[in-house]
Length: 122
Image (cartoon, rainbow, N blue to C red; front, side, top):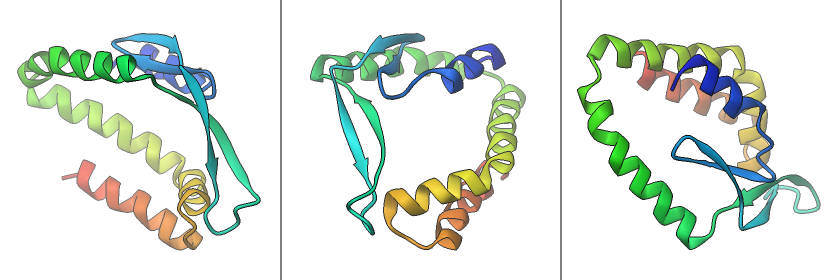
């Protein structure tokens, strides 16, 4: 994914659209994300894919896999490094979201973010 594509993804409204095969599509429906530790709190609403959209996404992933497999290791490392850099920059924000979404303490949510980073940095 190019930096330009990444910016498009980050700027898109997830309440209305899903990203399949390099294109934004309207979701078939929306679904509420409820905080399990405070069920009166709706964290957000997000687009929900139809069965056909799920099938399309799986087919697109299968089609893209050979290209990713052929990508040189250095390029893959660069892409994962960029993802890791973004996660570091947003770790408190992501930790807060994980805490609310999963009903866990903030430090556990933030810890989950760092756990993923440890995998990206190997």
